[in-house]
Image 1 (cartoon, rainbow, N blue to C red):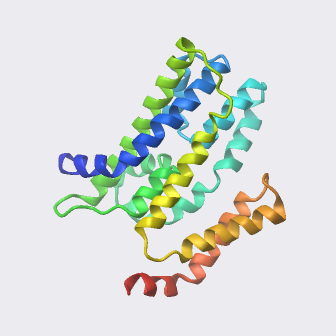
Image 2 (spheres, rainbow, N blue to C red; image 1 turned 45 degrees about the vertical axis):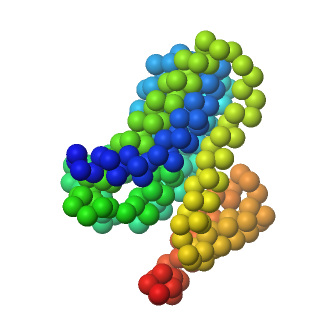
Length: 229
């Protein structure tokens, strides 16, 4: 674990920079909704779903029922099901850490794990676990700071929730620049755009994810050959 700490921290620096800001934004929004900093800490510790927590703020403010919160969170974060499928074997090898790895598989952590390069002499499983723990701690820290600052320094928070979208764009650009082959990216963009046009912004995520998975599985051999070249 000691050997893996430094490379894990280095790999998570982009997420650190992003999570501090979007976690901060969530903390401010939660405080504006009337919830004290301890709630920011507890929600980020136990829920840990960026877009889900952003949605949670509006649901809490509107007095939504627990059933509504559960269903909406499931629909919003169902894409994580597809993330987990690609790491079944790796997580199974991690023993007692498997439940936490499943819980902590956010969009950003998934992106890091997909392109993670383990230095020689470092246990890959230890590095994966540390990446997940560090990302989680960044999110908790950002949300608590935001909740505290939101109470001490009142300001107009209009548009602050766009921080999550901005982080997704940055991660996509980094993935694009680090890869020589962009077919998966084009497949994802195309499937998402088509699903958005046909189904609208409220219903496009799940069908788009299914379409992307089907396309990637169908083209797996061809894509593997291109990467190997």
